[in-house]
Image (cartoon, rainbow, N blue to C red; front, side, top):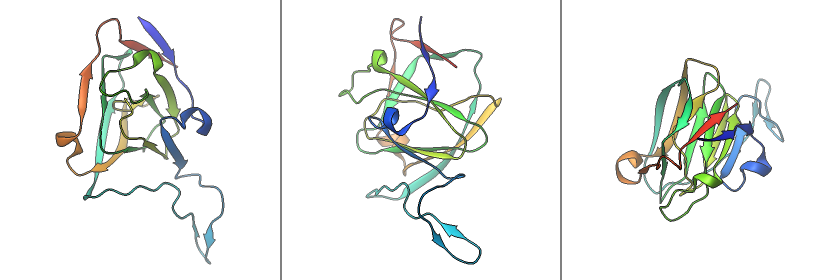
Length: 163
């Protein structure tokens, strides 16, 4: 089975797949008051429908073997790991045919909001060290029911993520 080594999340490496910003260690210009610093509009998105903020809990597997991938044809997905760094695998949009040979794997620091572009292949984030990852998924309401294509990878397409 092919292995893919997880790499550090950088803007340059992640830019084909989306964008991100640390919500717990913000930087750059801030609007300041006596007690606060406000960092406006660091990640933005507009959805034509109501937005769902959905918790996800992901157990740490013994082996990070990836057997499925998914994409959304009409919306980007946002993921915010809350209690641990997470591992996120992504591959370019490809009109419904998975591209496991083009998959990249990133370590997303806890508290970093990641926005995955529309139609990018991915699946649930995985915990780096916690027994169970707690994360927030932000998508238009009911995306999981009406715009989520999940594909089982053929055995020769499956891969294992290593740290």
